[in-house]
Image (tube, rainbow, N blue to C red):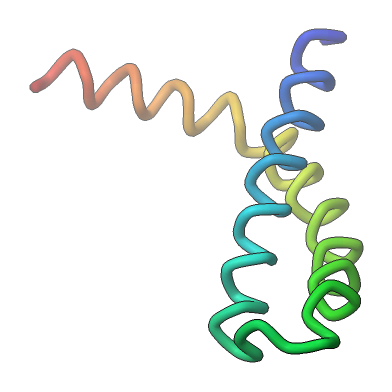
Length: 71
């Protein structure tokens, strides 16, 4: 369980930071307010991503294992 919590936290940190940066850049470009908008988006995205990763992670891992065995 400890490993699952740590993995979910780290994976969601990485994905939410990169995705929120990307979407903020797509919407605003490099503007003087880019960093503050990015941080606002990230602060909202990370908790949601962590919960989603924790809840759905085992199912997605099982699905990936199933798919990889068939290819």
